[in-house]
Amino acid sequence: MPAVVSRRPSPIAWLIAPALLLFILFFVLPFAVMVAMSFFSSNPIGNPHAVVTTRHYQRFIEDNAGIFHDALWETLRIGLVTTVASLLIGYPLAHWMARMQSRLGHALALMAVITPLLTGIVVRTFAWMTILQDKGVINTTLISWGLIHKPLPLMYNEFGTVVALVHIYVPFMVLTLIGVIGRIDERFEQAARSLGAGRLRAFAEVTLPLSLPGILAGSLLVFALSISAYVTPSLMGGTNVLTLPMLIAQQVGTSFNPGFAGALGVILLAVSLVIVVAYNRILTRLSGEQGLA
Amino acid sequence: MTSATIKLDCVTKTFDGKVVAVDAVTLDIRAGEFFSLLGPSGCGKTTSLRMIAGFEMPDSGRVHVGGQDITDVPVHRRDMGMVFQSYALFPHRTVAENVAFGLRMRDVPRPEIAKRVAAALAQVALTGLEERRPGQLSGGQQQRVALARALVIEPRVLLCDEPLGALDRKLRQQMQFELKELQQRLGVTLVFVTHDQEEALAMSDRIAVMNKGRVEQVGAPTEIYERPRTRFVADFIGEINLLDDGPCPGALRPEKIRLVPVADARLEGTVETANFLGGATLYRVAAGGRTYLARETHSGERSPRAAGDAVGLAWNDTDVVPLES
Ligand SMILES: Nc1ncnc2c1ncn2[C@@H]1O[C@H](COP(=O)(O)OP(=O)(O)O)[C@@H](O)[C@H]1O
Ligand SMILES: [Mg+2]
Image 1 (tube, chains in turn orange, blue):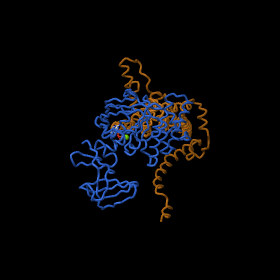
Image 2 (cartoon, helix red, strand yellow):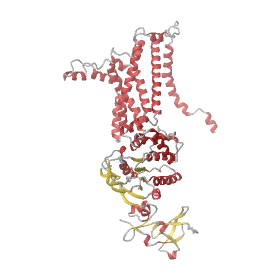
Image 3 (cartoon, chains in turn brown, cyan):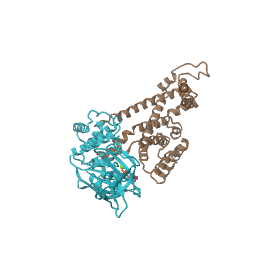
Image 4 (cartoon, protein in one colour):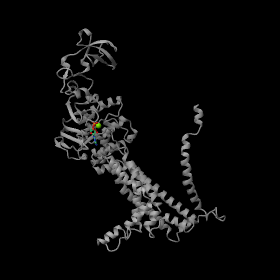
């Protein structure tokens, strides 16, 4: 009897089938199409004269218009600044929440972190616009108090973009970190204190290194989300900010050049992969090499 | 190693405004003493220890160590070694780094750190495991690392919160011997928290029995065992027959009851159960409308009795310990 049973495929295999199908249909397939398109002169299905070419990549590398490299750099810069700011804001918040004694307090704080996720990105971006624009809450208040005469340039630039992105992505950082910090036994820090470390030193020597996996995961999540953000940089950056996702949308929507758009996507992916791997290396090196000194 | 006295002076700690964890506890612990806090779970042992360590601030009362009032001194300046219930070894550091931690915090020069770490690990027989991580050690080895880490800073006081609780019986007994031997060799004042009365009796110079945040009795193990002052202490330590009938309540240890021929007996009864314990047998005997516990040691020839046998019970009045009501 058992032999007959064991020859059948495991029931688990059927359970993962829908997920696998979804993964292939919505992740592998579009990605493969994007990569394929980036190596064709035009859509090979609609146009029989389409040829295999690397000219989209050459166009990016030569950058005759002088905007592509800047866009890549700007995208990465926004991604890095957003990630660092989210970490600096999210870590203390997550630590505070993970160590909170009161269950009610914890639940309330968690709700405060999660509720913004329930309103869409567009809504939250518009909210920031009403706060940061020239006739927005901050500028009109400062002007009416006579503190400034001209509105401060708070949006339609990288600053405004980063502010809105940080607000949108901090919850992801916090939720990732809470799980990791909450699982670190408080007694490690207490042991460090009983051995002569002040509170700050105990945190730096014990809790911080033990939470590196959370820092890594949260940073990667926020970085990946913010370099691929489209709506927020478009609205908050106006004409002064051009990121690769905006450029890709232009190529698809107005220039009808899906081949070049595909090439831009592949380039963004490749560059961010390099950054992610390097970041991972640095963090593991940092946590692994804390010796006696 | 220098050791210090510890004095708790009417210390009280309340949590959330209602749970009185420690209730006006006064203790005088001598220098170099092996002192146990013994009591059931939730009676305030850990909280008392944490107030000595400085992790909890007493609501009222003072804590003195070595004659100095240290109630307001922060944890990291108290110079006490602490062994936590689950050891709390730093999982991301090697055994040597764990032990070196306290010395590093004291800015001891590197060559001296290496020397003292090696000596501390030798002291607990862990030489050769320096580069392992805590996760790669057995429970007994982790226990020893925790001890070495606490002792390497040469503390005046060593605080242990149920340090042997996670070990199996055999290892536990061995570690009891080792810990006691180490404490005597170093002469350090050791405050030992446990809910295991056998462990406390075996290891301590003196024991404080706690109940519901209060200290019921302080004394040497023999004193606690042979002359329990309250009903709680008598009941908590070992097996006991509580004799409530009569003018004043008393307690009688099972080994003080003799099983005798019915003719010579003070009370007649029948054996309910006979539990063979190896070196002795514990009988439950129904007599006079209640159950008595009697322990018979197997020295010389055994005269085993089975359930249902009629037996006589006898004891000396001097063996009945009067209890405060
Ligand atoms: N941090 C805390 N917050 C609230 N109540 C606590 C806290 N620590 C201990 N208690 C309560 O105080 C009492 C004594 O606890 P504890 O000292 O841990 O007992 P023991 O170590 O003897 O088991 C218990 O009722 C426990 O629930
Ligand atoms: Mg406890």
